[in-house]
Length: 204
Image 1 (cartoon, rainbow, N blue to C red):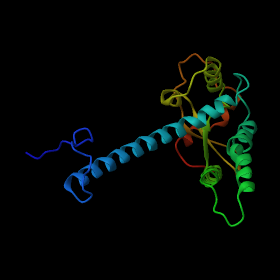
Image 2: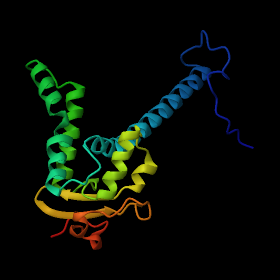
Image 3: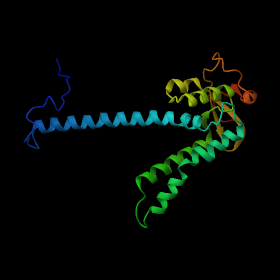
Image 4: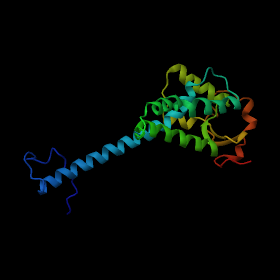
């Protein structure tokens, strides 16, 4: 029967004074590599999870009350607040950069975030539907209660896609699960949403 047990540093005895080319040194090296890989996977998963939570959390904190906002107001939040949130820091890092020196890691990362989000804005930017009064009532309640958004909260919310060159277009990407929650009607923008386009790309 093959031995599938994985070694750990605790199980490897006599690690002091190990010859670099020995079998034990190779065994220790494999343990370190496996440990580093697992840490990297956990970090990547955490970054993905936090990134998924960040957007709805940001727009929740942008609410000034439980009332739904207008489509132009939501579009302005996307461009002037969300996508532009790193502009000041990018400018600071750009000014601090010495001539002939490579860009700082932070600057490269922030520029990439802005590039990706601007590209999404061109094709269809996904955002919680703050023109739906049910969603804003629910989210503002979370805000008042100090609720930190988790995956289960995201699934409740209705999500839409808005695009830069289509100022009147709303495309439903996820309907959410607000029906039956006693949050009242969706508000004036309800009729403006074409639910027949759910899950499709931006269309004229």
